[in-house]
Length: 245
Image (cartoon, rainbow, N blue to C red):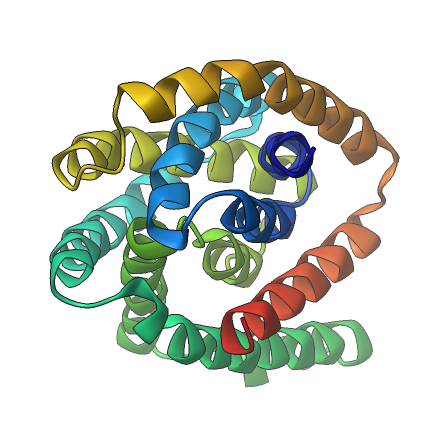
């Protein structure tokens, strides 16, 4: 039952609220050891990505996809080597605190944007903006390789880019799909994906599909303002989970 609930959360995270994936990851870690659960989760994420890409492909902004992929792929490589050297749990508190700070900054920026017309006061120099987005992109790559937990980081990245609800979903669906496909050979090399784990995945694919369809329906009834608020709240809760897991 825990595994089925986790699979539904993973599917829903792909088509509605990305932070829900952390609930699925936490539930799956109750069924399997933390390291093994990483390999169990990845194929299900790829399956969920196929639904998201199919539903939201026409809304994707490829300029944003191509901007985030290079630093994220570098982060995947860094995460691969860190996974071999150190336990993934070592980095969870650091990642969690960083996400909390980013959530606070994004919430303050959103409040200022809504309450003030002084948009120029929020602008930064181009090199600072580039450094900010590259740092988030690399962090997303590291977190997705270590713990399949890049959803909150990518949430902050795309909200900071100012994307509307469906643009957010279309862009993030392609970013996650491409990243997760790139992770498959690394996870196999680490022994996280094997015949036993794939057999278990097959049993859970219907639950992933149900969660993805449920998420698509939920997205149609969530207004843009509440969409952003729910994303920030889910990112904050996910960060707290990483800190006090």
